[in-house]
Length: 452
Ligand SMILES: Cc1ncc(COP(=O)(O)O)c(C=O)c1O
Image (cartoon, rainbow, N blue to C red; front, side):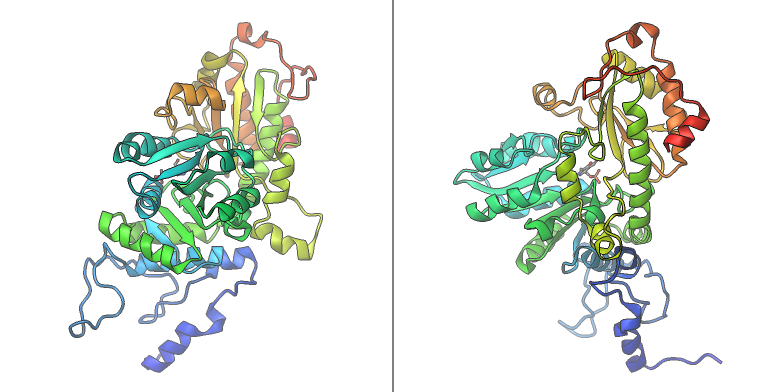
């Protein structure tokens, strides 16, 4: 026989430790259960979608915490708690898009006359925001190669308020040493924000390494299913979070409740997905590295990657933290993004992108489906050519977001597309990054399975 619960009993359910993940829980537990509790009014295990614009006040000045959905919304708040649990912060602040989060970051912390330092390889939308919107408002940006911490130190001046780094950088995967840069920003009294969209708190924990703010496009791995656009900002400083909420309410850039609900659903499997994305990306990177028509492969998990050591040291997210106590020898994960160039430059790159069948030629990354992107004509078209050329975003660069399909199928698809690159271009001299000449190989499906 069912019976109705009293309000006191409901309160007990809400706060019951049995329904909570602890900060010391494994990352799979936290992603699935952290910051979540059954709905206090119905017991629904999934947070309901509260699709209400406004909320009744019991009396003037007396309400249950939400007043108007531009300021806050219960479903969005549930996502904010879950993201906060994952990063061990107070509830995060969620936005309609990643760019809304980045715009809020700048408008919250800088004003006319201020200066910011930004990684020279960042998402193209961030460059567009700085050059086309913030520069005319009197906010100057210096783009520096943040793979060398000393470049950040040199770029900071008395007007600098904020340093924003992206690691691995989109799309060349260049890394920044967060701990070393945080030491500099602390010494100089400047805030450090890290766009951690590529690795997520599962693989990289910038706030534990001394950063002040983390930035996410939740559109990518966090939601992970190509179903929403969204963004978030996290911090441990309550005053910063309050400022972000004020600016979000003022700009009107909060996430919609249905998108927050879908993101809550995606978040549950984030660590599982990151493990598989990483394993498949490593297999794909190794295949590309051994392919005669591929001239360059960028993947931090390859031992030839110039900053491989830093990737091994820095990718100590929660997957690694739990692992250390259980099995010190278990694998390290490097994320799901691989970039590469094909012999013959842009024409060959275009041939590959136009001939894949399983990989989808599209913008976005971090979703279940494998997506192949041409940064110069798609995501980074607004980055000035001179900046692109200086930072290795060549016309022939291809970015691959390795998805959750069977990795052997992804490799076979790439092999088919690479076979379409003409013989003339394949005669180009080919050497690996270590200088050894490559053997021409035909990857059969069986071989693709072995590589995967
Ligand atoms: C690293 C990074 N940050 C921010 C963004 C912007 O996010 P959104 O597309 O959700 O606005 C992107 C988008 O590709 C990105 O790759």
